[in-house]
Image (cartoon, rainbow, N blue to C red):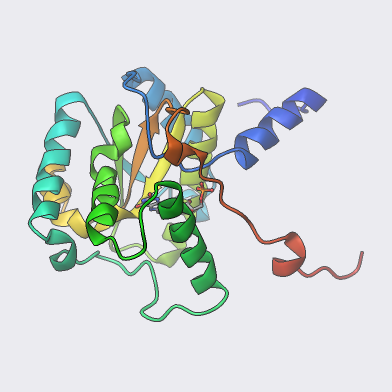
Length: 235
Ligand SMILES: Cc1cc2nc3c(=O)[nH]c(=O)nc-3n(C[C@H](O)[C@H](O)[C@H](O)COP(=O)(O)O)c2cc1C
């Protein structure tokens, strides 16, 4: 792709695509073509990676394949599989601490508050959680995997790739939700999508047109100010 100098409106559009991204948890029943998904993956694959190793691998499902996958996961979820199913990697520490504990509590509190789910209403929380497994109604689901023989650096590369995909989706009028909730069901997913033995599920991903009339999509998350996470010297 050619190197370009951006005009003022283009700069604003690019910044909006990044800063206006949010995790969407209700999608319209409107299809997304295979060509569109291929295009987005092609754009995102321009993400940098250490020594250009490009560790990403995508298993894309729509239609019946997606429904079959969702059913296999939901059957296991409803049978209590979340507690049984261990993620193949550790996303969170055993013990949360500040400032991370407060941040994660806030997003949970805000989301359940918005949906009118009372603290301790385990059944309602579980129902909301289960929406993950139908990709929140998105027409396209993606399972991203990485080769387990690779190191943490490749997982760092993965982050660049996934964010590039989120932004490319928005440039095309589509929205996304990254979904770690799938990690607990890697056994069912592996079986359904015939992963190679060395593939580890990194996360699931919902892709589609947002249903902006859905309450859940009005959730706004906050960010700490730059002064809190950056120091500057020599300016
Ligand atoms: C790798 C990753 C996994 C995530 N997993 C889930 C998930 O399983 N379910 C969900 O509803 N949101 C999930 N999220 C969304 C986060 O909760 C969300 O990014 C965060 O609260 C900030 O909100 P925002 O994306 O709307 O800016 C995930 C995000 C990332 C980056």
